[in-house]
Image 1 (tube, rainbow, N blue to C red):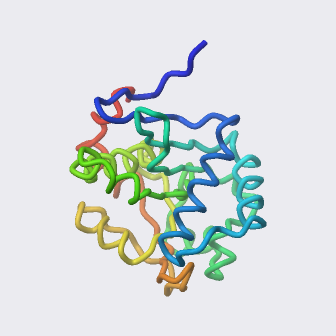
Image 2 (image 1 turned 180 degrees about the horizontal axis):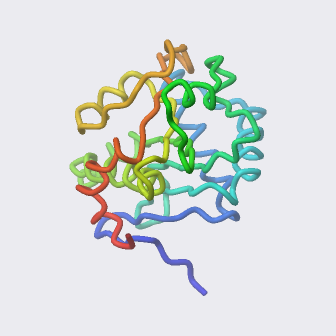
Length: 215
């Protein structure tokens, strides 16, 4: 049976990434991170480590990609449901204890989601006038994919790490998140750990959920 996208748009498609295609998804994300920030290829060892990490959490993670009509990925994001047992990478990188932090805020979320692997290939976009014009559309589409899982309950919590530029873009869209600690330089740019809730993301999600079609 031929695979079908979640959404078939006129100039590109939205895909839910399945396990056989997951390694390509992860390679794409790491390539974009390193090319964009450091202008060097991603280290093979790190790529392989991230592939294993994504494969390990595949069963509780939703991976999304936007692809050209020829099947080339140019955007990615994921949302991963935290099992509450294994320490999150973001906790290690920023010396955080998410559970304790939530406790101090009086929060007891039914689910905690980690959103990540957000990447956009500017080269592909810049070579395609239509994609270049539609940047705001698929930017919002990818965010809506990730937020759709957090917004199933207003008390759910989303944890994410984003650079300052992305954080400003989120604020411009009316998405106001709490910064969990001071930022760290990651791949040459300042990155911040942030927290939001289903209630905090609901307004954006309600405004854009029609983009998904399947909600």
